[in-house]
Image (cartoon, rainbow, N blue to C red; front, top):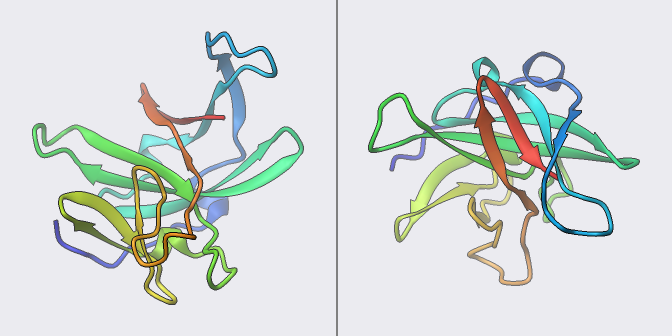
Length: 148
């Protein structure tokens, strides 16, 4: 996988404030997880990242959505939703990071201090004490949804 520079789309144009959709059918008693729509497929930039704003249960999150082409099907996409907040710099910049891989695992490299974070679990490869929150993400029709 190459490491192209990412073009981040402004929050106001790419993805809108998330709205609740159908609840998850999990048996969790506290508060069931829901699939929440962040944006539409057309807002994504293949091989790149965009930032999205999520308001959920009185909390606000900025989420970096990364879209990677699937190697098996040219029309299929692999999506990742990870925290946009860089814990080292304190800035919301992860969606502007560089994509790459380490031992076949896709990762994003922070654009400021160059820490590498695995997209699947948010773990920093350069400092085991650092990690980014990740969310399950899916494409439901044209809606890009995360579970929260």
